[in-house]
Length: 291
Image 1 (cartoon, rainbow, N blue to C red):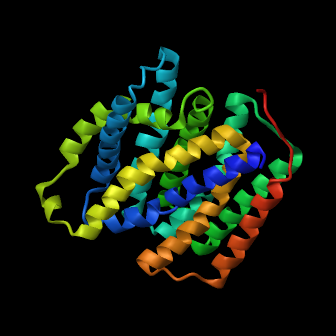
Image 2: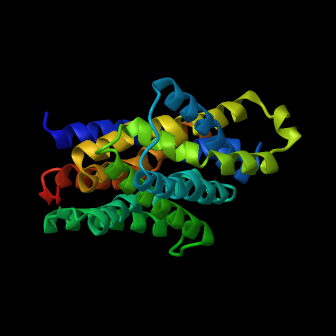
């Protein structure tokens, strides 16, 4: 198995973890303030990350690497969780899943700009086709117009992509587990304060499902999923492995159907087939990088 295939398979495990984020957030929203969910899940994950770094006796990164960890934190610990959780207060997880289908193309573009990856023309065309498919799907589902919820999701997706690219690059010289752990730990003071001010004593009466959902977001979406995602991106390359994200909207659709009772329509299945086809075809397109 070559490194690109290995990276795509490892990255796919991370995508499976992330695909539950929106529907699980939707389950937690009725019981908790969206800002508490966003900051609280990072607070819990940060405590676990601190315990991991202490147990492994990981040395403090260099100043340059700490700056990169701060950029990662801004993208995947603050930007994406806050914006998407607020969007889920009114929007549906199924709709959000498809809007976030633009993330593979955004990740590729940011990777090209930031680290000089050089995808072939064919790879670009397939990436754009995949993104166009999910945009068409979103327009059909929302009667031909975008809403402010779409705007929040797009901004959140871009934030995540910035964090993905920086994390992938840093994972080439550091253990991927260490990368996300340091990003969580350096943001822990802010998350402690934010969690304190957004917490309500009424939350203690929330049912077990709400708390289990919150813990999933904390331990898996905010932490363990990045173990696989950053390692996959580092091994297989940002441009190549980012295309696996095209499958995420449809994994989320399945999860929304199972957990929330959202109906899977023929149109969902047709677009799923078309988008997955672009991922399979892009696997055979040339991607060069500068390292």
